[in-house]
Image (tube, rainbow, N blue to C red; front, top):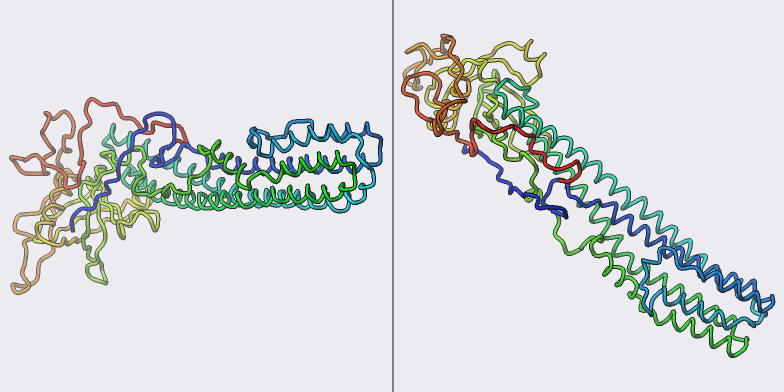
Length: 489
């Protein structure tokens, strides 16, 4: 099976602003939910203003004409969160400006309508006020909570990206043995796993925000309709008053009814389109996301693919194997980074292993499993593992790369292990002859000279099967590759 590679596009930041392909976007989803929450507060206070106005009118009906100055004071202050309303004529702000001017002219309002106002107008606004409060609580339990889950998932991804940066930097500066769980290849796959969870949380929260956002249009229409209904009822209650007063109240109602139901919301969207979610924007795709050190040379396998390993009871079983620049041979159940966290089932540190000779499609490796940590590796027994490739050509590729990574730590005695056909008889088990071989030189070589295969004379330059391969990295200072602050990928 040919080597499997993940060629995700790399995106480079060009300054401030939102890049949907970054692992941790700059935008904070709580800005959207917070904006919508604040807008509900604006309508709640607008409703409160109107309630105060009607209440004061009801109380002042039985008082002297001077008491109408109190009514004017209830609406004399600017609306709270007034920046949410269009300041031009024809909107909520224009409505209250019209109320202020007309209230000045009804100083001699009749007192006969006190009970009617108290029993028919105020309950409408009180119910609306309660509806706005319930809408605010619903938003806090839904979209705001989802935004916090997105922040939590992003923080988790950020921690693993920084961990990957630390160990890729160490891999660039040191050729020493590393813990299998901290192999940059394994850490890189772990980042993908957590990034997948983060994207799911982001898309779910985005869906919730769009639904809430879309519901605001109809809800605001209901609020404005209720304002109109309350003012219309109020007009009917004061119909017996002087004709001049009736004309002024009619003017207030007329101003309210002239407000198009979507006038304020369209202006709100136009003024805040940079903060609101664009329903037409595509969802994030994991294939378009990039993160620091994603394609660092220490994360790219020297060779990867399917091999079969002989077990004690079930014969040969296929699995996904990878030889990494850290000189580990890792065994995984498959190459899927999404369904579960990719943790090696088996890890062999090749410089500590003995490599047998190649026999057709088969080759053997003798060593200890290092996947259980330092303590587990110290207590583990050495086992001889038999591997089989899909073809002799594939076996030769795997064998050469494994032998090079091992540094030529062992060879077979001549004539002991040779391919045996099913007709000629049983194949004898290989016998090992260990010898100490100096580590393969990876630094200080002339430019263009690759690492030769272990053992033998006349070594040829070697190019890893996987894209990227091992490079010496001479003349460069290792860095983590994490260029941004937490929460900015």
